[in-house]
Image (cartoon, rainbow, N blue to C red; front, side, top):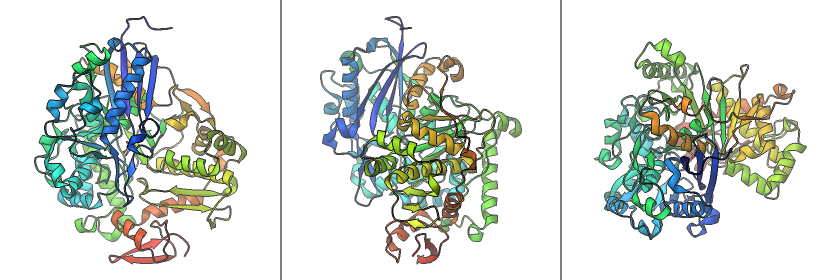
Length: 627
Ligand code: XUL
């Protein structure tokens, strides 16, 4: 049933790595409009690949901030041409790729306040950024800053206790520290630092938007208990940083009405509310409406696995994020089990022995219990605690696309046909495809193995297609299991993101997880989650819960059930090799050095107990390739 002509609408946006998208829903939660702008194809003047520039060091990854602004001009023009009546939009919210940062030049806040509706935003804002190339989540160039921050905070664990995560290169605080050191002049000229999400919200507000707690948890700067910037982290990162960041706010906050620029240029109502924008992963959680026992797999530029666990199993990798929809909850709890020991901090004794790893796990469990205890008995809270676990994988859709281009004539139809024509288990052929430094696990390398578990340099095109998809999903499943995922009656795998519209890929997902796979009608839960959050933001202050507000949303659709033989397909080689690759107690910087100094000149190397030893900075590292 179509909505009444004047019925209110809610707009959700997502500024992701490769595109800017919008979804509009009505009060019945029906999708009434969708639009998008692809950066590479529709804004070729910025010369991005997959929406980013990868610099010559292969570690620095940025996106032109003006490309994002111009994409918003294009998107709103498209929506207007498609006949969307902006005056009906009661509230809008959005999300951005997590961790990325925008540096506003001195004077930009004045410019934002007085935007001339006769001009495009990208013209008006062309001089408003002190740094034109924004660091994004794919960047892994701030290892030194990570080590410095951990040392200042009293170690990786202490930092995790404060901010929810040990130091990660892509996390914004470490990117800010790197920029302050390497581009002092631009840094001096900076008036405000936004996340990608709060940057997009600022455009709509006509003023600087607050960073929300949930996206703010991905910066290594927010104290997730006090929900304020951590003094220790601020000081270790940059002087007067709190002034550059502004005060963080709950993710459900209404930030204010839309700026008069949008009222005059596009016909928005003056009373349209801007609800705080958040990160793409928190927004996706909102869009998928995860339930206990579910595992959600987002198949986008990065692949992300979200879990809702009643009892998290301690592991050594992870992020705790504040919950984006329920103010009193934490969204993500991810434990880490492998030791990124930074020797300077003297954090682990016993050189990563099983004992020391076990005790680190226990300490993390204690830290979590401390978080959980807030406001109630630990046991009770632990049981009702909304424990979302997130693992991020950098080698997602870009890797699948590369294999599609090389092995399936750049056609998704041929890619799907290859999956149909090859059996589950791929006759024992398998591959690891970590083309860029992975996040989980932090390794790099492409390795293919035949049915005799011998490393081979190539596989036939059809077999390669299945190898990449099975390999990726086995890795996702393995990490999910290590975090406590197990199939229980009623377990659902919820798939979202671009590749979730491909039936054959979802069949492999179902077979590998040995559980039924469901999708929501829209392949993109992030935008939908933003539209839901816009609606919820209007009533959150009065105490309405998110679950109640979205209960009318359509149920996910069953799209694949596991093959009866799925249970029998086991990949011990894959599991062993991946677990072994993570057991090595060496720091990421050493891994990178290894990459450069492998005596056998291998292009693709990663740490693992294998035959060959090589010595870097006094630490024993190993090259996995059979030399
Ligand atoms: C999450 C992460 C990625 C980005 C992708 O920590 O780095 O999932 O959010 O946009």
